[in-house]
Image 1 (cartoon, rainbow, N blue to C red):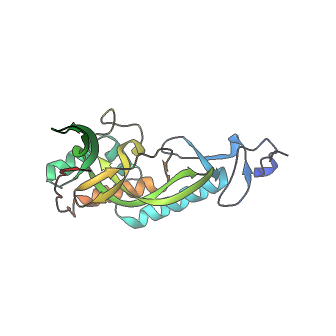
Image 2 (cartoon, rainbow, N blue to C red):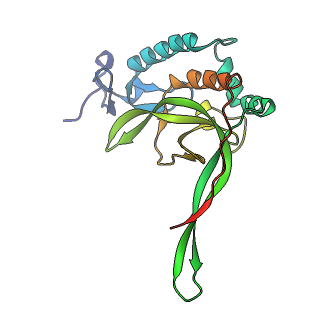
Image 3 (cartoon, rainbow, N blue to C red):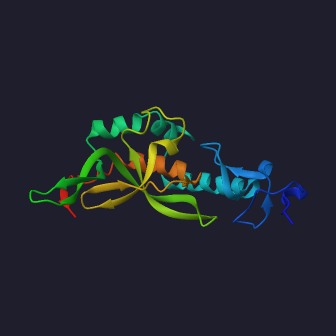
Amino acid sequence: MAAECGIDDCGVLAIGRCRDCGSAFCMSHQGRNPATGDGYAALCEPCAARRHAAAAGAARNVGPVQRPGDEPRWVMSGQAVRDLVAKGVPGRPVIEQRRRTVKLRFGGERVEIDEIEVGTLWVAGRFEWTQPVDGVAETREWNTGLLAEPRGGYPVASLRQAVARCRVNEHGVTLVRDGGAELEARAVPLIAQAVRRLLDRPEKPSGAGRAHAS
C-alpha cells in the first residue's frame, strides 16, 4: 500500500520520507531550498523550516554581516570575485584531465593524459551537500569553492550556481561532477561569509598541472 502524507494528517499520496522525523510527505509538504526553490529529496516542510531557523542562528555566530542577506547577494552579483581579484587573494587552478592517443614511431600507440588548467576557484571550506545514493538521500561535507567564472557568468540567480564541490590536490583542484548533489540551504549564508573572510586570510598560491603518460 502506498504511503500517505503524515504532515498535519494530510493523507495525500506521499512522494518521500523525511530523514529527520521519519514522516512521509506529499509535494505540498515537501521542504524546499529557499536559495533555489528546489524540493529536498528527503526533508519535509516542518523539518526544513527548523533547519533554516537553525542555520540563520548559526550564521549570526559565524561572522559579522552588514544586513541579513547581504553576503549571498555580494557573491551572486560577482562582486566577491572582483574583490578577491582586486586584493590579490590567490585562487587555485581548476585542473581537468584530457586524454589523447599518440602514435608510436614503430607501430602501436600510447595514451597520454594532459592536465589542463580550465579555470580558477577559491576554496571556502567544507559544507554540506545532499545527493541520492542507491535511492537514499545522503548528506556529507565536501570541499566547496567559489568559481571565478561560473557557467553563463555573473550575476547568477542563486549562490549554488557560483560554487562547486571539489577535490584539492598539490597541483590545484578538480571539480566533482558526479551530478545530483544539492547544496544544503543552511550552507548558503555560511559559504558567503567564508568567502568574505578570504579577503582577510589570503591563501598561498598553488602550482599549475603537468602532463604525464599512462
